[in-house]
Image (cartoon, rainbow, N blue to C red; front, side, top):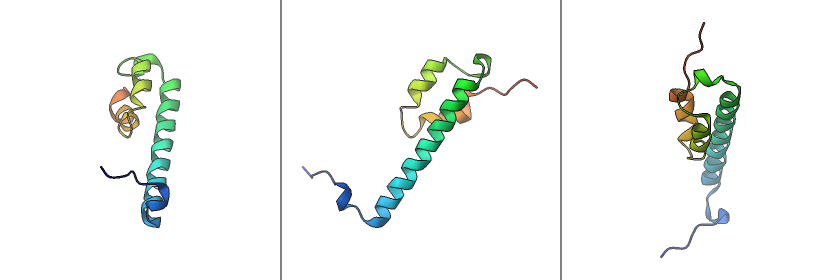
Length: 75
C-alpha cells in the first residue's frame, strides 16, 4: 500500500493548483450559502437545509445549487 503524500511531496505547481482550486471552492460555497440565506423560500427548489447539506459535497454542491437550485425571481 502506498504511503499518503504529504504537502512537502508536492511540486510547487501542484501546490499552486491545490491552493487555487481550494480558493475557488471556498468562494463559490460562500456565494452559494449567502444567496441561500438571503433568497426567499419560494425562489428555491427544495428545502434550504437540504441545500446546506449539499454544500458539503465538494466540489459539486455549490455549483449545483447556483445552476439548478434557484428559481428565477418574479419580476
